[in-house]
Length: 288
Image 1 (cartoon, rainbow, N blue to C red):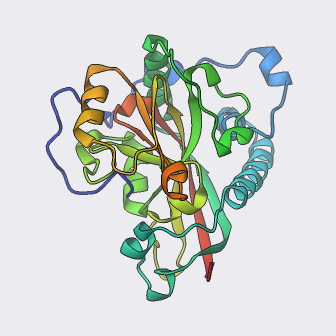
Image 2: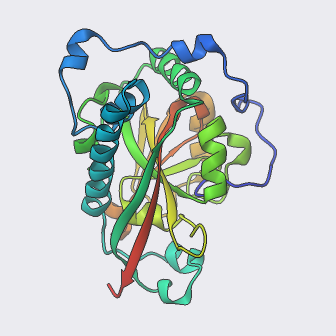
């Protein structure tokens, strides 16, 4: 996957350990139930809110209702953030020849699976990390913000897209992100990479099977102290030092500004990312 691969590689000493498979009842309960006021105020435009409601719902009828709305919202987001900008990453990663030189003409969502079993513990770690973060510096708005109007903008909390394989998606869904499985070849070095555009995330989404469905994970990401760069070739070593020292929690690599393509967001701490839902979808390709 994009910044998450199956083969093990050494992890730096400051990296957090992978989330254990055994889930504690205390961690699951640590995601506080909503207040009566927040329940009464339905925000069906928010992917975060819909995912939480699906997890909380005891009624199959209500859960199915929110599931349909969530699928609709995800479909809207994938189409609205789709761009016709081709990059060399698409040529390098395309599995089929007909996809190497073109960008998708559209995306059709097949299913949206809300992350459940591991979510309580992962969200608890995320919330505790957010309490420790002193933001300062710039806040940055992204394309996906309109689908999470309830996000914590003050901490640069975003909804971002992560294209990957079915195998990697299953691992992330069960255990969260692990820096031990992150790739080092990205523009910011060893990190987890995310996009605001469905087209960019799609470059890293592998077809699942003969159905040609692909996989993308929608994630809650804590940007915290953001380092912005529009350099064509940012210094990986310098960025890694900033991550290690805590000078920044995330890097926004603005390739849109420097080369007319896409913005990429990198983070290195697993507790700063929570997988919200796994999307299966199909892409149709045409020139342009």
